Image (tube, rainbow, N blue to C red; front, side, top):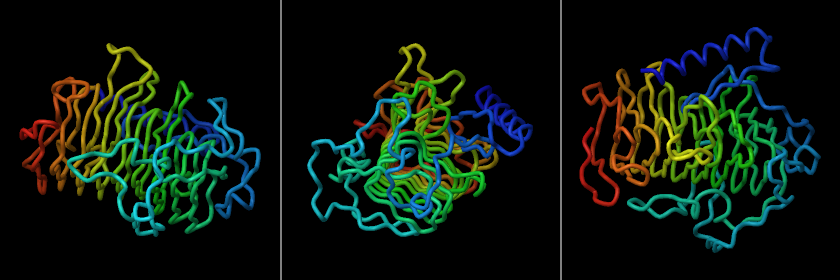
Amino acid sequence: MAILGSRRSRLVLGAVALLLIGGGAVAIVTQSDSVWDRSRAEPASQPVDDAATAGEPTTSAAAATPSATPTPSASPSPSPSPTPSASKSSKPATAAGVDGPSACPPFPAFPDENCTGWKHTGVKLKNCNGDIRKNNAVLDSCFFPQDLKIVAKNVTIKRSHVHGSVYASYMTDWDFQGLTMIDVEVEDEGNTSPDRAAIGGPNFTCIRCHVHNTGTGISMGGNVTIKDSYAHDFTYTDGAHQAAAGANGGANLTLIHNNLECARTNVSADKQGCSSALSLYDEPTIKNVLVEKNLFNTAGGYCTYGGGPNGTDIRYIDNRFGTKFNKSCGSYGPVAAWHGNNSGNVWKGNAWQGTNKALNP
């Protein structure tokens, strides 16, 4: 398939570029709908000080001064949405990913901007340094104006806002090492050429995350959980393959009760072209994936790629396929690359949104 071949070639070129320049000080950054890429260059690092190393708030110039994009105030005010009651507030997370009571309405309703991200929690944000190097750090009510880099283990980010992207470091082999994000908004508004996923790597959990206006959505390595989250509206750059969420191979992925929507915000209707809402590719083989009670919509090709031809133990259960952009969910249809006869693969209870008419691949 042309899309897949294109992506593989670009990853090889990125890796070669990295080797030529000796370890990633400067590199060619590629973008894919689903790949987190060890050959990527890191964005320009923020200065590291004691506060950053400890994971504490800071008022340093690096933390307080956003890039040339529209400048948020030092303490962005939450929207006038009602402040949740104590019973709705997230209890502290742990490395195991405890998420607390969900603020989003249960299935068959789906998450949106009113129950994801930081605004619905009613907190007032403070500027924080985005270079996190202390293991087990817990950061709450933070505004990160220039990306968020995770170098430590078992970091928790709660009720916070990231302008830019969330990424791990080459020092950890691009591994998030147990990162948990709860009620976090990630956006890159104002950047006309974003070149990386909103969040990308293995070993992280994202609960009630609100992802939008980035180059692509959530890119999963292995051991990732995405729950009660909303990903939508992405910025196109030439050659980009985009999805609300995706993976190129990997294992142990869980996506439960998310609203996954892929459309391009900066192109005309005839230039829409996301790969899908959810892209599961077997490059290499993908296995042990649970996709349950999600809503899919896309202005692009298919609403989901189902892990074929070699994916195993992939379960699509009680998902809904929408018609927001296309009557067939995607312009080509609802699903591609699904191989129901592969070991452990399950397709059960999936239906069209609105009518609940059964959808068979």
